[in-house]
Length: 455
Image (cartoon, rainbow, N blue to C red; front, side, top):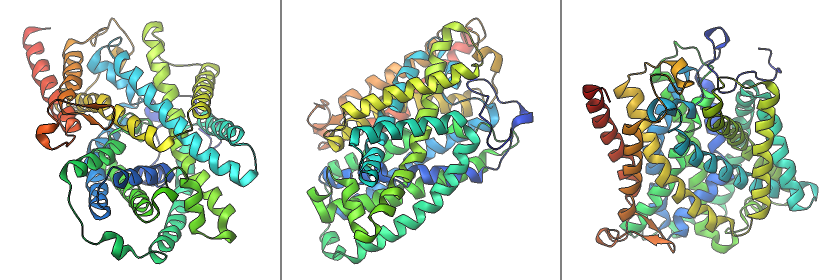
């Protein structure tokens, strides 16, 4: 496939003859996807919820290190199967049953795409003088254009964005550290365990919600690519990028407070001084662009996977592919324009929502791939409701529902819902841990019994 050619593949398997690349490209792609302003906003949330800044930094590093493990394990599925991440769910849930997690992932993609449009659009508006809503729409359209060209250009752009991100964040980090007395900010650290665990869940959720993306960006790698290399290149890029950007955001909020909240772009640009306003705004817009493209790229394939469960299509025509991308782009742009007020508070709720619903899916998917089927799948059956994976798969559906329900008593969404057992834990939110462990174990047990009984 020529470098500038429009990608032909969509939800169909990538033939070995079209495989290419090295897993190190996953490092630059995922470093760029994390080293951006939304990650900095997420880091600010760790201080916003009441954690001492020093412990917030610990939560940032530990949360990303933990959450990055399942995220990077998903990456290895791409080279092995050569298909997008979410269509693999049909092997666990059944062709029709997979629609349940698919719909939730569509919500995730739209939410992140909309939030990316808000922050990127704000930067573009300040550069160009355009009305913010117009800039948001233009930013969404540009993201869609890159997604139309597809996989090769996305990886190429990730390399460029990574280099730019390092330069920008090194400069901004030096300005932040040099311009404030961080010793006073980090002094007398007090550990509030419940709030620390809440901050940990916020940062872990950032990585866990990348699970539906990862195989989309590794599926063109040769099938001989080792699990180890795919894992470590992905893990290194995603954890290093996120930990750096989130630490920056946590410290920025700790020293600036309300001067940062709600004015994230303006504050970050202000660190550079007047002479660098436009270059920094441009860097912010481009830095956010990588993950924005991934959101629309994965979003269109997830929508297509959902709708083709009934039509049984294995591949999309070029026109249909572009149509799906355009539809996701328009919807994400509209949501961004209508919902850009109170961004930080809404983003907290959004992260909680995703964590509770996506961790059970991730657990089931990984247990199935690594422990139950041990990387062996019938790709033809994934596209056929009458095939070996069936229309509905009871073990996965039962485990998924159980994984969501087991989290309810332990959930703590401040101001919205507090589970009945949260008080016994001092207010700590441990729901995501149960959401990872319980459904995976239950699924493995049910699958073993189902095979014994020929379920």
